[in-house]
Image 1 (tube, rainbow, N blue to C red):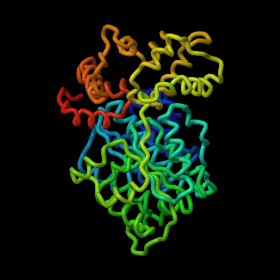
Image 2 (image 1 turned 90 degrees about the horizontal axis):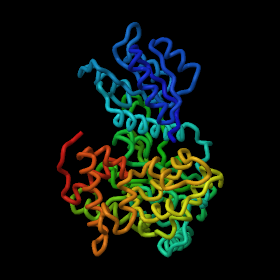
Image 3 (image 1 turned 60 degrees about the vertical axis):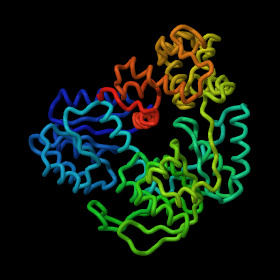
Image 4 (image 1 turned 90 degrees about the vertical axis):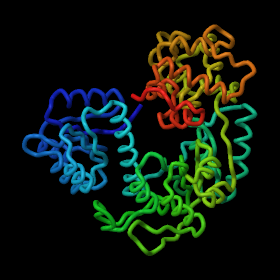
Length: 456
């Protein structure tokens, strides 16, 4: 469930109410106002994590609202949504520090993603402002499993934790790369220091650069004061760079300098700052291919890949699924619910493209939607498994994929194709069913030469 407080400012009642309803369904706390001055007063009385505002409104318009909000709280992300776009208003909004500029009509998924990115930025900025906030390890209790595949990962964690070497984690989305990074930190000599993490693919290049390395006052529009970067914030501790493959060439050069020289230079600055940080990076893509395509620096790869650890996908550790199911039942049902034998059969036979994260989401939904104390196959079907998934889960059943004698790559390719065909090649819908990000789906389609079909 999402968390965060959103303020919506729009003079159109229907738009305001629709946005509020949609975001509340995502789990956000939403306040709304049709008047700019009232919205500013509301913001002065309450704390919000992001603001969504229209531009053209009676009295105080969105640009003026943006200016006032940024003056009072430079770290507050403001999203401009307008049906009256112009190049001038877009430039003015971005120069004033707007987080994003969207044109009506806005698709639900696009707005949800922008809001998620805005809240991620807010969280990172709050970490810089509130340096006393502890980002301590949640504990290893979430790393569940007894399979040989996951035990080998546990062994590597114990062996590398006592070193200060850089670690590169490989694994599909949802396999638990951050949990592994936290486990390494918690077992290391740096455990009493901070664990800081960032998703390199969640922010635009300029914002990511500022978050990583900091900036000096006046280095760009909106830089009203000096700001320490996350490398400095993580001093003495561990810095986890998730999806490091998503960084731009310019960011890669700066990351290489940090690893080589153990120092950072803030944006707009000239004086390097020494840092003592252990770096753990992660990727769900093939870095060798990116290097071949000149999209990732080979010298940075060699600096990151000192100790590689590959986290197996859930489909390769089937015997761990019942343990994980019990763990998530304990989290979301407090042990008050069980899973029927048929439901467990479906869960253990499913291909799990979204890995442990997808399993957790399914159990959480099933706990909410199941009638009685037992989660049945029908409960899974209602929550997220359509009937076609249940057929696929049964090996050799009619409507299945026919997995005998084929590689995992071919199985994945067939599964992607079948899902896309059943959604009429609506890629966002297919990605949601598959439990992966749309960007991950696009990369997989390109990999298998399947990037055709109609766009949404």
